[in-house]
Picture 1 (cartoon, rainbow, N blue to C red):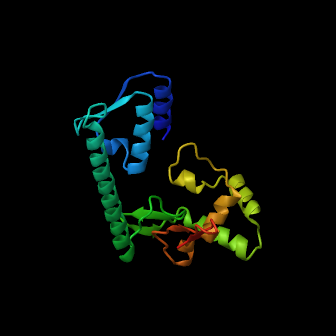
Picture 2: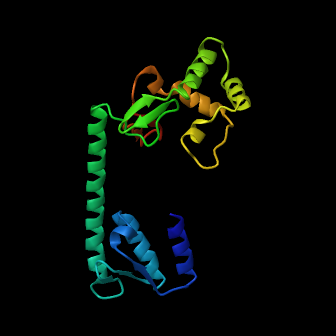
Picture 3: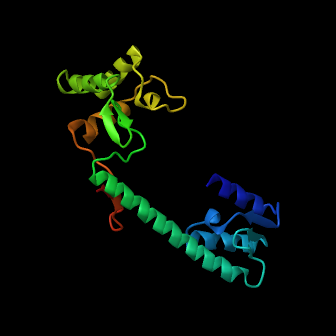
Length: 201
């Protein structure tokens, strides 16, 4: 998205006359977005060339061919999305893990999750302190930070992650259904047009 913003900024500054793309699928996979982009470039007198489709939008038939290929690109994108979602549903039905990163205290072996004994003890301690010792989230976070317990982000290998625990980190662990034996996958969010509120399903 940042590159698109930069492209439009340079286009408005009349820094070039043409934009060269490898293919329409790399330009846009949504018809409306693609048309809106083309209209703005047209208004600036800037053409587009798509190498794979051999399209020059400044030619007489360029706009028609552009619209046709853009429609095909969107359909292909939608089909790919459907196949990916279907694959995830099939994996979830077989009890396989779909997520990119396992929850703190687990490690991923293939498509399965196994308890990571190096860190699962900290998960148990969080639950013990919260449920039986009546500790608050901030107090638990401060304790783990003081003891130098690696954060979930650091364990996952995130760049610039340290040992500074946040209340939100503790809360995520306490509210993750995985720790109660329930694997929740393929979660979606439905937004109500009438109330503008969202509901997870």
